[in-house]
Image (tube, rainbow, N blue to C red; front, side, top):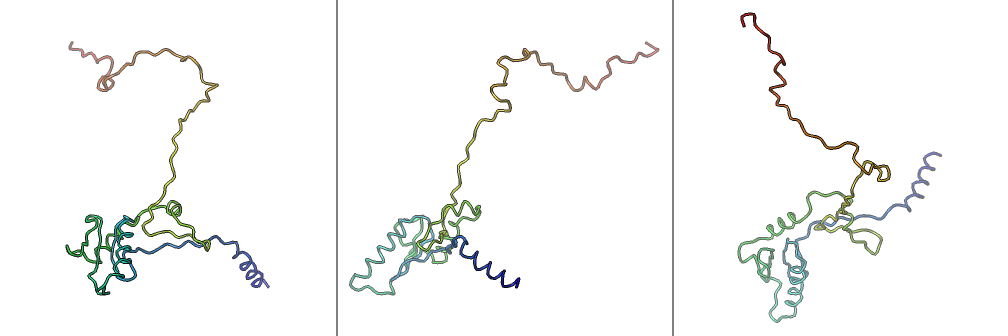
Length: 176
């Protein structure tokens, strides 16, 4: 009986569960017709690569075995494959652009709500931190604070430490 009650309670409370959170894996491979690789953080490079991908399909003489395109932030607009960059280098750049240390609540603030009620956290999402508000702190309530100082400022006396270690009156010797 207890097991049946626990099962019914579990089914009843499942409908009240919160939305699912999906963390996207790192992405460095883009395109549908001819793939290109990019591991940087500039969305304009991805948009340009996708536009080039769409434009190449309509060109006469287009072939799917076109040279691999690899883009990087240090050479904007150029195919870095010509200069020796590989797809593995683009994957390494994508891994370097992903946040390595974050608080989960800060990363969830960057989540994008989906139509099915779930939240999608992009792999390159930077944590959105809250603001820190610094306010003055007073130990005494302003109404109880005296308007005038209770004592007048006085001189500051500094005693050398070696004088404190000496006796005040040196012992007098009988021979003196």
